[in-house]
Length: 263
Image (cartoon, rainbow, N blue to C red; front, side, top):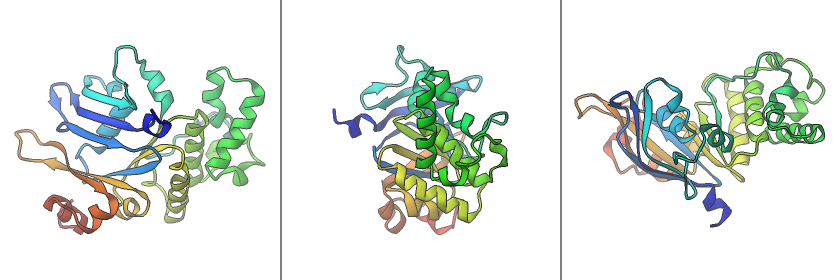
C-alpha cells in the first residue's frame, strides 16, 4: 500500500454512544492523506464527538463507547490488539483552547512526548527546533526557549501545541475548532500553517467558521441535527469537494446552513 493511502482514515458505520444513546447516525467516510478535510455544521450535531472517536478520546468519557470501525490505512484502530495510547501517538489532537503544559518551558512543552519515549538528548534538541520551525514559531521563540509557555500569546500557544503534536511525527492531525479563541491575524497564521502541514499529514479540522473551511479545506463534511427521530442526534447529510459544497450543495439542509437560514 502506498504511504499516502496508509495514512488515510476510513470510518465504517461509526456509531458513537453515550450510555444507551447513539449520539450520531452511522458515519461512513474517508479522510484523505495529504489533504485537509473540514467538518462543519451547527452546534450539537456531533462533529466533535466524531473527531474524538478517531483517536479514541471519546471512550475516556464515562459511559461512552464506539461501534463500527476506524481504519488507519487497513488497520482497525479499535481492534483488540490496539492500545488507545498507541493510537493517540499516531493521531495527534489540537483542541479549541491552547493547552500548553503550564509548569514547563517552551522547549520542554515540545520535548515532553519525546522524553517520555526515551529519545536521546541530542535528538531532543534537533526535534524541538525542527518542530518549532514547522509550526512557524521558531523565529519568534528561539531566544526564549527556557521561558514559560504562558508568556506566549494565544496564537503562539496554539502553534506551540501544534509543534508539540508534530514533534512525535504522527500520521494524522485532528483539530477541534483550533482558531475559535484566536484573533483574525493569529487565525490566518494557523491556516497558513495547516496548508503547509497537509503536504505531509492527513488533516481533519472541525470548524464553525465556514469561510475558514472554504479557504483551506479540500473536502468538506456537513453535519446537522436529525430531529426526525425520537431523540435528536447528529447526522452527516453531505460530503464532497469543498468548492462543490459551497457553490452547488446537493442537500437542501446544506444550502440552508451555508446561506445562514438555519444554524
